[in-house]
Image (tube, rainbow, N blue to C red):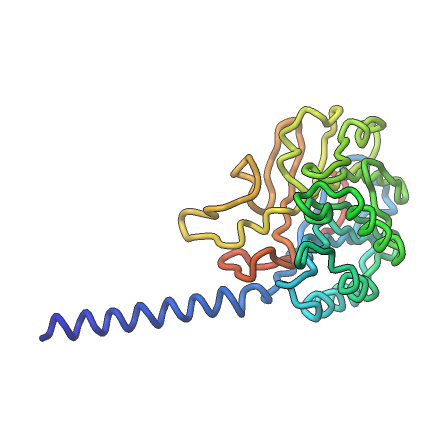
Length: 281
């Protein structure tokens, strides 16, 4: 009888713990945003940019799993920071019944924060629609971003007060051309690269680039088990899950966990907005 009571209590306890963890992963952590503050040392950074702020927002995934108000509320929090540069590193949408949720994205982008100096974006794989191969879908997302004065870099670069920012189109999309993106890179410049998928860091396409690469895509796997990590990460290099990674060629990769999600759960992988302070490297 004592053993039966023990096992019954143990079963009830474990069931309650599982229910609480499930509720936390479903209802709490996906909306518990971390505002991570980091230094961003850049070689040859002009003095007038030293101490300026750059905010990275990634993977908002407007669609059926992410509440628009959640994204808008966090956009408002970024807005009051009055950041100098804001970059969006891809995956603005998630298909709903095989269709782009353009109306919902329009409603969100209307309130998207903008940088005092510049607001930039690159595309992610989900922005390419079905099978990540719909170029027309990517063009539609680009047009909508442009409508709200967000400059989309598609294998091109832009200079902001002496800082050259290079933006690669998505690795899985139909317009990926990193050679074109980096063809005008010079080590004498102050430079930064935006690239949605961190796997690109392992390709031989960088033209000698040394510096930081800001990416997203992984969501840190969304579920990270203690002492093990994420069982599922959508990259070939399973080391590329989240945070800062040193890469060969004197490059530093930063993998943003994203603000939205592709499945409506997170565990030990809180959503993130990254706030960088530019410094001389």
